[in-house]
Image 1: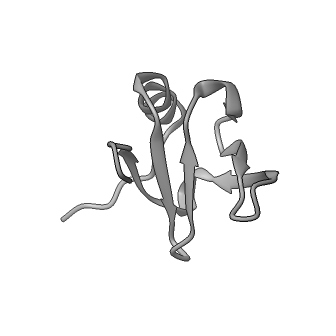
Image 2: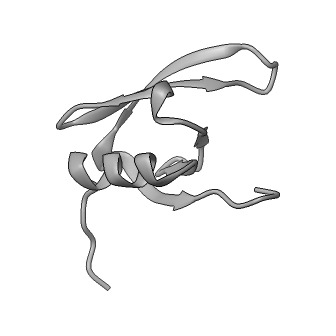
Length: 76
């Protein structure tokens, strides 16, 4: 299996296609429900997400530390 780093164009395409869940290499997960809540540069994504306490939070996610970016389905 080959390893590849997420790039800006690929991440933007996934986010535009619909809600996604990003899993980081430390196991943390971030759900992005709309492209309005994220900006992507060449090296990182700046994400506004709803934390477990219900408040909106901001996080900076380096592209090289993203393990999985997958579409969210009902129930995920």
